[in-house]
Image (cartoon, rainbow, N blue to C red):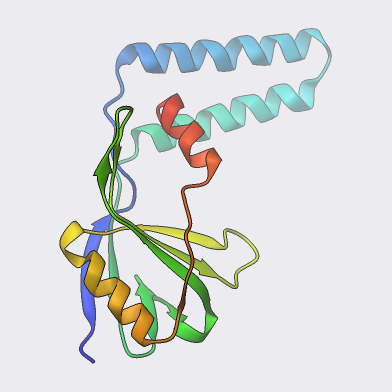
Length: 158
């Protein structure tokens, strides 16, 4: 089998207005001040640090990630996920709903304890080919969806 290669952005870049950053900053500052008023200094520091980190990630440009299905497994950048370590997969075909557009994605459920489900953006043209390769490698196909936290972050503008 020849390897199937594709690349995609690390995440979908969103355009954020100055008003979004102002609202975000006001929420972080007022929450921190309220924490200090109630003598919860640890929470205040935690809120400021998390606000700085979220602000940094909000302005960071996404990196281009390379993916490859080889004879040995799924390769993401330099990390290999052998087929035997992949518990299941699901190929979500792109579609349009009344609320939003669903992009085509490949969901991989691995044996990892932290973040066991990996969501990988794919092109519509590659979806059937990826599905057939994974089925040929005896990887179980099981329906998966985006985690609720990803949907909440999308609504909040992240």
